[in-house]
Length: 322
Image 1 (cartoon, rainbow, N blue to C red):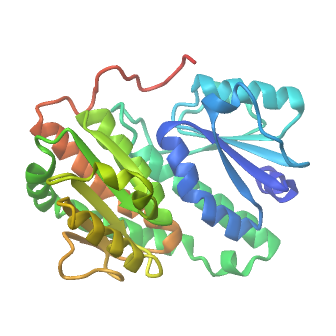
Image 2: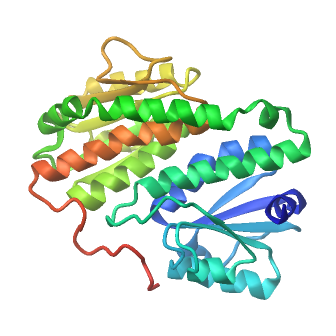
Image 3: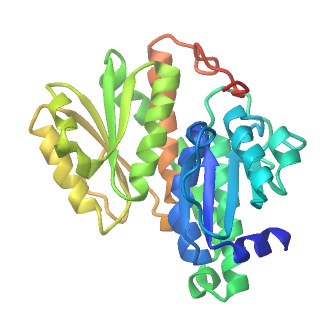
């Protein structure tokens, strides 16, 4: 009830995070705004630590951190506490620094995440924010929140993930030809798929060491398409019926310039030519199911390059320094 009340009293929600947690915040933005009727703004903790933007009159800071020990986020939290700004930490680790120092905490209960690259924490973060958004929305009488059968919709997401995992051999084979020797790649998508593209590119970068960019598909023509040449891997994500046709236009643009394109589409927008077809899920939750094949892509690309999936170079599980 205290958390619901804090969201109800806020006139703007500020989500502060880093890395994968930042992407989970982006993936939850639309859902939070539509169900709580409250604007949501995203901030990179390492940037906010040295200067906050102009804040609303009644802000609520939500810190997302798998470990609860992210130094950059703690720096912002210390300032928030000094300013008397209400704060909520969403974390997987009870008793962590951010959970102790924030006003309120939501624990993910996802179990220990051992590998450096975050996967299940991302899933749990979006799911946790979905429960929060629905609870606040229902308390406010929001009709979308009332109609959003979250537990049922999450069960469909689970089915979609199971189906994707059963296709891992197919994904492995496609990755072998697409990414085994490449030095760079692109993920593209629109709307929610753009946020998944950001996370997908981070996963590929951090464990396979392939230079990968996640792009809003419509931005390609504003400069980045100059990098597309014969054989450039481009992985396109399609889940939104309104936006899919536009993304397919971008696919045609890069294919015409020689890109090697792999398409991942939900069944409600899929075509026979798509490489992977996923079970359609609720749009609020598509970032959970859409990210799984991209995690497998990063996994297999890393194995084929003879690298350690769980312990990538230069990285630590908890970033406890600025």
